[in-house]
Length: 473
Image (cartoon, rainbow, N blue to C red):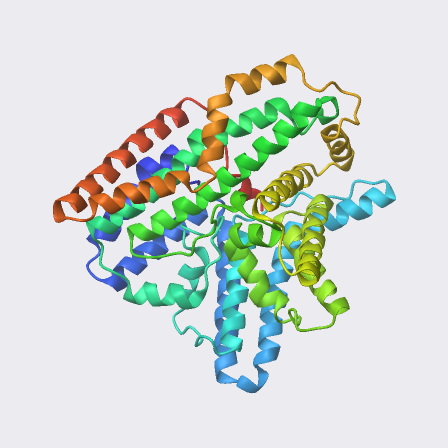
């Protein structure tokens, strides 16, 4: 099941909100939340649900053991992390290893292994829970159902954000009552995310496939390579941030406040700034649970370089079981080190305008590395970007595609900046000055939500289902 399906919008979500609203007390509401989360996950396969429940049970038991036997808590932490990473490795990276070995041996050794829904996300959530218990940032959870809801809650299980248990636990037991204003806020945020996915990201994906398909990339013109790279950058942002908007909106509907996962990364001034804005929950996870335990920046230069490369190689591997993702991660790791050395040597970053131009080139080129797992196709596209693949500057089909979608592309570029948010905040600020203005604000939000929802349903009814891009990760 996905947020951008008619079944979720017309049946699952309304039924959940109805049952949740009718539940008399917070404890009963939490049980409704858990039951619907288990049902949501079961749509991906009961066996994978049992895997998620089993891994959560393991984390629960080990957390309790850390509390009861503090002298052995390091052993329990290592055991828990090893088990969670082993499960992730078996399902996500077995074919990566076998494929690499098979390529060297000239044989196909890959197996038929499906990736359980959201395993990359709930594994990291449970690792953060065990680590926080170990460092005594939080007490061990004594109610298994609460930890299970943390792991598989349907709002964040498939694509995050990668939330921390401390904040989740506080709101699980002390959040606001089920009220109309929070439902209106959450519904608006959800509908904005749905529109970004269905109306913008999905059509942008069609443009990408038209100008720079994964197969046949070697015949792409220079303009097709650059246009495809830029459009793919927009598609990725609109698609992934759309899911985060929808998850955050679903949380707001029932009183949860999940962390923002994106902060307009395409306006970043350098690579470090880009990664403070892109997939914030993942970046903070690797910072807190990998980079700092390795020693962070308070080490020798050689060790610092190693720490950074480890973190970025893992960041790449987390995104996908293919060597192009490792290359993509190391690409960013090297650029981060270069920027740190530049700032240490010169004393400041590049000037603002030049920094923006440099960063745009970096992430657009980086998404090319991200898109093509076939290194032959990747090499041809990179050559095509710089006119080295023997193709013309532009072809008529590409020119027509870009011309026919010009205003759509401009709108998507603007949607990747804070312009619309700033305008909405300005209108909201003026409306919220009086009681009648606040009522008008919620009426306007409700009307916009209804309009976006209708447009999305019409679009979904007339096109084939397109899954979220990050589902594969």
